[in-house]
Length: 431
Ligand SMILES: *Cc1c(COP(=O)(O)O)cnc(C)c1O
Image 1 (cartoon, helix red, strand yellow):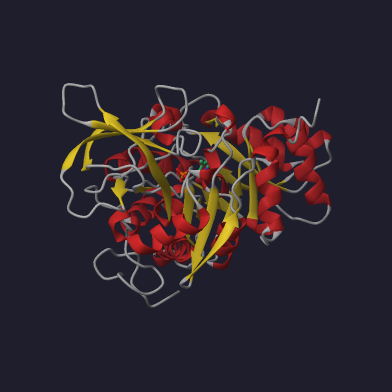
Image 2: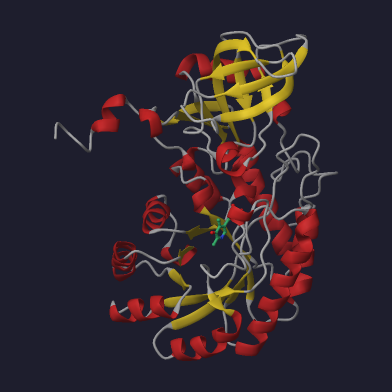
């Protein structure tokens, strides 16, 4: 275990764990303006050095109080599947938690060993099982997490006898929005009381290695009670069933989307997690996605239209070239993302509604938020865009997906090209 302080906001401002949070204001405006000028907008910018800091801070927090220093941190790949991010996370010592065959393939192709990959199969399409088990037959000793007796049957019938964990429905959920609260919903996992019986059955056919639960996304300081309750239930279950390699209590660690919100004290969350779990003869595993990548990314978008707001207030609407197809979270979850005008120095603030180009009323990044008076051509940055940003991008309205630049060690490189109009119709050909 390392000598260094554990993810502590007060003293970890430099070194491999970095500050506890990176705010939108901490990004260097001239650098971002330069990237937008070179690569166009909308543009995602992802700082791999920050991804690494977040990953290391997590590992240190969870390893610190663990006697063997071997708590397992698995990055929930779905938050950002870019190859450069996956490589960075792997180098930082995290595993890969995958939600689909596509993510499993990406993780393996990015260099994760099979043993480091976990596939959590929620109502898995047959094609997904086939692809994942092909990789397993090719020697990837990955772990499959099954959330239904049906899934076990389908794994059996495909000849799988490898590493298996069971997803538990713990009956408690947490999260920043009902759409991301998964813990208590019947869609996810095997009901708590049925798990011991199911596991006993499963041991005959599989190498049963763990139990797994995920409460939802957006665990904050206030939500810690729900998290504790889930972890305590998992601890109880682990003691009841015995003979497990790990107890995976999920991800969902929140990040401060609002500028004044304090960052999660990840060391305190880790302490609370270990305490709630109690004595178990198994490794504690967590699988955060958002926490690793959210504040490592910004979305850059250019103002193309400025017009009167039309509301009661004397605000304006700023039309921009990114929209719900670029960053879906505001439209889907009413999510708040900080917005900074990278052009404006000393301009007066007024209520600004930032709106995308998509023909949907939900296509707004903010409504009447106090921001510097926008002008056509201004470059805006949206903060915390590294998690569930590019991942949720779509081509609705025939809008090609944006480009992505990654930063590492002071250099920038294009990691994903901007999608072309031709690519949008490539699957149709001239049919
Ligand atoms: C989405 C998800 C995670 C990660 O959630 P975050 O809020 O990004 O930390 C972890 N585990 C499972 C099973 C998930 O579905």
